[in-house]
Length: 147
Image (cartoon, rainbow, N blue to C red; front, side, top):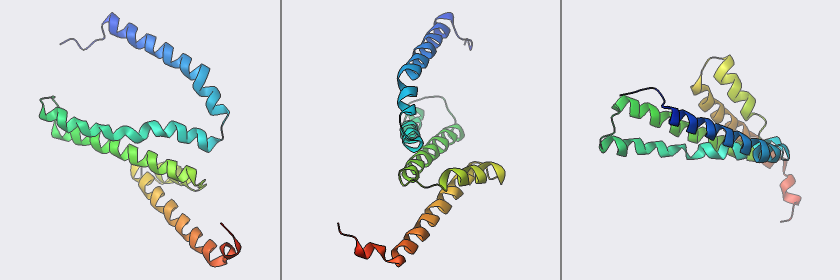
């Protein structure tokens, strides 16, 4: 089996790169620049929420797609974790949580937890939001508001 790209495959990939780069330059970048950073990040993250489709690898494997069980699990765990992280990041960005991004970076790279640091960061950020909510509730300013 030939593992090198044929000229037709290489040309198609190069043309797709040119077309997608043009779409990004003409439409996506101007749209992102016209929105707040959190809203722009949310739009970019939505694409990753649907990574759970990697679960289809099990169906493909059952139908004869040549992939090991270990390889299939690596694909699924990585992609489903990516989907969960993306969705959680969207939720935190919608709440305008300032803690989520720096904490995720700190735990993933500076402390050396790697990808597990992302999950720890999510748990800590959610806990901080809960504590903040309780403190705001106890202040009682909500009693004077009308809905």
